[in-house]
Image (cartoon, rainbow, N blue to C red):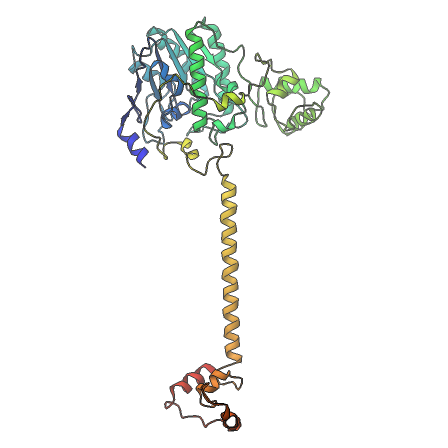
Length: 450
């Protein structure tokens, strides 16, 4: 709650203002280059976790907001407001975008706005004399399960976005460059929340390291754009030319496929893919077409020559730089966005936390034990009541203590010579019952017997 309060109040820490609906400004000692970062909630994790990492080597402005769109009106975020879109933010920061503008946006953009969104950002950046725009590819791995609040976007939208980004970069003569975050992060499930796009703390470290390295290359005059859009894992429900190419490749490999290459990824196609995967060493038999399967079938020419999975050293050492001063900013609100789910001990699977299904199983087990214990208690009480009805206090099978209290046995403090008296007492008939009302103890005994 304290972290949420600090964010809401816009507390300044370490020279950075890290608050909702505000721009973070950082001045690096001795830096002569200005960089800018604008994005949606997939970039906002850097602000929420207050970890700017290697980015602090430059002067920069950082503006990332939940539910932000690129050129359309943004949706209302979980932080409770509607932020400016990317182009409007660029216009507000006119003159401060610097040498390189980095954009991480598109996850909330409807399909029909992609072309206009890319063109709008390029035109605005050119009008402000920005040297380069670096745009991160959208994730399309098999762990991605995100859609905008209006459910207008999906992994298929992200695939189309990446394709148009690569085409726009090729036509921009190097002005727009594509940083292939999708390929770089493929296979690193621990960097992301359950939806596959929002960052965990490890993901923030990895992203800031990736951004810093990419910007460094661009400032050095290198072109970082991939030759082709990153591969999107194909699963049932996918459609289009890419699916038709896949089906044609399966048929060419001698795999039976009812319906032929119709461009629709259905159950028959999934079964055919699984048959192909079983026949090729090194492929996981999933029925989904990942990078390795696509490359094996010849439907994807991966320029990197590998599956794009980040090296373990990159994951472990992400965001570390001995020469970079630490950036201090308020902690993220636990209620801000889906990313906050990994901040506690019940983190999403793959981020070192406890799986939700394990917690549920433990709770169910405790409830079952409570029910069993309660049942045993009830059974024991019923057994005791039945014994009381069958063996009331007036039963002749009373204990020695009962006989002593009734006077039919002498007290325990007696002399050895009292054995004869004891025998006589035992042989003596029981005293006549006292009329009701004269002996309260008898009344209670009679009531218990009844």
